[in-house]
Amino acid sequence: MSEFIAGLPKCELHLHIEGTLEPELKFELARRNGIALPYRSVEEMRAAYDFDSLPSFLKIYYEGMGVLRTEPDFYDLAMGYLRRAKEQNVRYAEIFFDPQAHTSRGVPFDVVIRGLRRALIDAESRLDVRAQLIMCFLRDFQAEYAMATLLESLPYKEWIVGIGLDSDEKGNPPAKFAAVYERARQEGYLLTMHCDVDQDDSVEHIRQAVQDIGVNRVDHGVNILEDPRLVDEILDKGIGLTCCPISNGYVTDSMKIEGIRKLLDLGVRVTINSDDPAYFMGYVAENLEVLNFPEEDLRQLQRNAFEITWLPRHVKDAYL
Ligand code: ES4
Ligand code: ZN
Image 1 (spheres, rainbow, N blue to C red):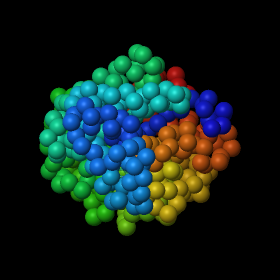
Image 2 (image 1 turned 120 degrees about the vertical axis):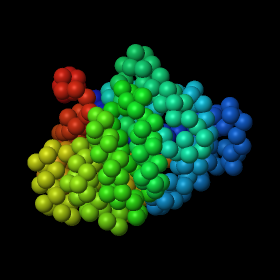
Image 3 (image 1 turned 60 degrees about the vertical axis):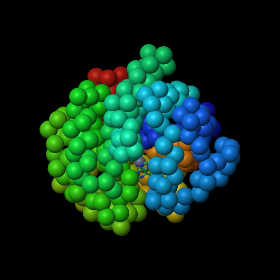
């Protein structure tokens, strides 16, 4: 790890908390909850992480989170991530969570959010790492279930800064969730969504997200380069992209570093993030490392990240 990257004050905006579940904690939670795992060791578990596409990754990701059952489980998950964030000099994070990945298997919404929220509060006072939560809907479930989840979240609105959309994108375009996004906007949530790399209709999905839904950010979104007019539009609107090179390398044939380079050169507010670090074996510092960019570019990537955070202007300015 370069000293420069280690020392750089960092900000992470594309991080699935369930994707930070390291094998060691998975074993600990399984033991605590009396769940049998089909692996005998951390090494065996990691050896099963042989995904090469989004669906093959998602299968292991959803199976893995079955050990998360109680409020302390979610606390330990988030606290584990925030401790690592501290070690990497991450000063601020916006953290995705997937409530439906838990409610769909019988874990109540309030168990999930109370555990995560308590970790965020403790991390701020004990570690001086600040974070906010973004609630993601699973796009391969029906829009009605997303809407019901949105309504279920309203009593906890003060603890959630915005919404996102993730999981399997094939056949699940942004338009499917137009009504959910409209209601979320009315409730005061900020809006982002995944437009994963190299999907069947990547550019059309980015267009829907930006023009029809009116998102504030796009998660991934590197394929926007295929449509220069859309690039101009996000430049005008100041929309940021949260890119994840190591993740790209797992779910497609490339980390898309050339594309990230091009977006940066065009002045797009591109940022570097880790996505699912426990599965892709790299936190944010490792993702910055693989780029091999000059120091000034790495500084610019962090300026972009703090600039597009969903923090009040004066708080943002204190980081910049
Ligand atoms: C994800 Cl890499 C990726 N893509 C879509 N949804 C996700 N949820 C967690 N990781
Ligand atoms: Zn993601």
